[in-house]
Image 1: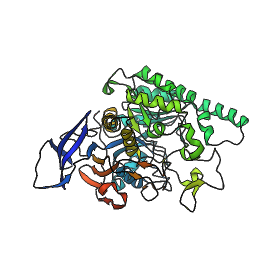
Image 2: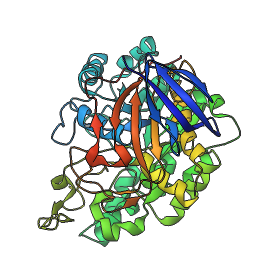
Image 3: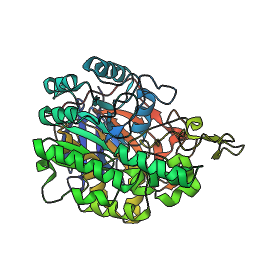
Image 4: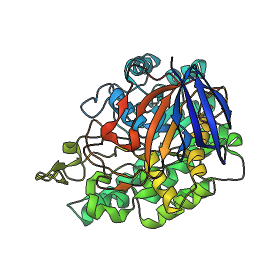
Length: 467
């Protein structure tokens, strides 16, 4: 295994930025010091660049098995690595739904063969599989958590049976992650809206999936968690109203209830439907601008604990788009209509670069980005030996050049679906190197995707948890 010595780089870790050398050996961070020398390591000049712990995305949909016309674990993990994401946690609403330990383990087998990034997979919950879900108590060092769709799911995964919810919340020894939108409120809003406006479009999405639907479902999840002292993590908070449910009074490691915000809810608002339409249709919906402002405030004051993507690729046909002769995304001649345009955005390649864009704008500090995308995720899920730049930790590391701009386009999008709602956006910083378990998996000299060098022979590892 090759050793690496990164020289004179600005190490961003645990709230500090310090120039150091970093020695990677045997897959781990062996030494961090102002001056290190080695006769057996490949030297990398880090002068003027920043070294970050690899981002850990706690919510992605990589679509395998069963939906591989959209994406595969291998394709989306590759895109993740190019964007500085070295570990991911993937959701159970694949086909078949991951509702048994055996089906869950099938996904781990696929990842072991194809994923360049480290991986874990959530156990799925249905109204009728509580006993099977609770088998994860025996595997709590090997599985990131249990996922409950308390609204907005596919297949058999919408959980609205309070007997099931009581059992899982009262007996689970692992983190419970929830998608919170109240289906009854959504149905009521839809029926009201369709009578007012028979031809719905993307701009109706946040009216149908409104703040009330999110708040009531999140409140229900929190009530269950408080009743049983469960470890609850609510995914993709999208409304100002929900923020009253969360606190910054305790350090993250002491919280029993935590919350995630996704990059698209920090970046887009309902005003963007006019231009982007179904490209940004997702659940929960992107909402009015005051919600985005409130999410930013809560992120910076630690009511929101982690940043993720909810990466959810669909084909252009499923979103209702085609490319014109100039290669631009335009609505398809046959509009799929509101009900049939799929919900979800491909984001995992661009989440860290997008947050670096906001660093350059002065909206957030680089140290805070690292906290929310690496440290806090590791702490929240109790991931063993990752998420920090510490001696002895696994060398999941990313080098970024804050002065290497690039524009998102079809030539550098790595998602299998081949599109992004941010096409044409210029980002001011680039990922130039990504190390996974000490292996230099991705290297783009000068941040140029066209010159990227890959080492796809080394695969990621199954995440382990200190529980």
